[in-house]
Image (cartoon, rainbow, N blue to C red):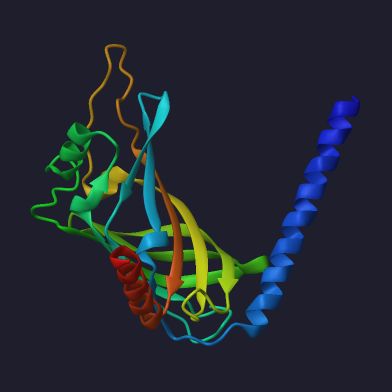
Length: 225
């Protein structure tokens, strides 16, 4: 049983290290500048979804074109508000035929519903900068409430262009049928090809508009040199 004790000890150490990192983040919040208006860093933001295929493996998709307005009037983000806009036709799942099907009327119907929207309605903060975000998700013109579990992951007081930035992770699950995404097939033994439950995963860095402008200029200089 020595291996088991070592494993428990290691897990305990990992928990302590994680708590120490969260406590260090809490201290950094105290010196973080107040920025009321934020936007997404498009180069360090990932909006993805996972859906089980035939009960075997998860298919992972992502949206390449995402923008957001983020508002907060305190450095601790206590009054965090977000409005997100996703270009539905930017969906990718590493299989062109599947991507075409996702854009078709069976799924996102991008010709008639080009945008997926999310607007937060409340944020309930928990210890160590974790939170529950409630909001309204609009897909194919249908709007329903959803709940996401979130976490403030990190803060940088001054990035490479001298501006503050922060990072968040959010996760949640939805039943796609509520938004009219009802396409389904079954295998010969009756197994659904695509699960109805979709996992949502967001990892993002938020920056100031000034920082994005400076970053774009820096990238342009790098490309021309």
